[in-house]
Image 1 (spheres, rainbow, N blue to C red):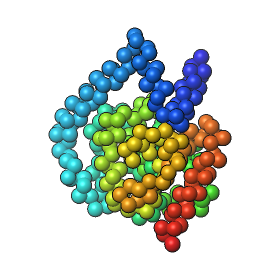
Image 2: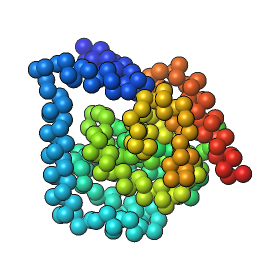
Image 3: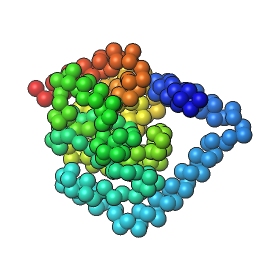
Length: 252
Ligand code: SF4
């Protein structure tokens, strides 16, 4: 029964990945005895209060980490962050990996179970598939830089909360500022909407190339979604070819 439930949840997550949140918002309104929205709002309120207290207690100000001159310095300044509740549940802080001067950067939404254990983004089966995708467009993992919007794992691989994305986003922006990539590949709907501040479906996001403060942004599927739906690989192939072409044009 548990296995069927798990498969159902994964199937719904895949639908959400492609078609967005509309279906799921409808369900939360119709189930009257489970006020999910109210609970979520209450939880977010608590996180905000908690953040404010911890923010002051930690002595870390936005200005301080903004002064980091390189990724090593930034990592050591933020790796004990407790600004959101995920700091308490993580095993390992997952900063990012790769070439600190990369012209190509890949951004996902958050660490999963394997990443949380190893402290590195995109390891395990999804990471292996990502390495294969990179290889297919003549990149090595060491040549690019790979990071997530959130540096800590949401328990049970749930989607990141908006407040968590908002709290953690300045760290990613600082990473981008230090690396100065010319092109970014967003892996999945949540990462793309988070970075680009949009509320679009993955299908809509994949249709365009975006400009993020002068950096080109291409959107494709999250490798974990490709593992569950191999028929999406063809679309991913088109996206990553576009990503490589933009990289070649900008670095020629
Ligand atoms: S997810 Fe980001 S903001 Fe939250 S504790 Fe981890 S590093 Fe800090």
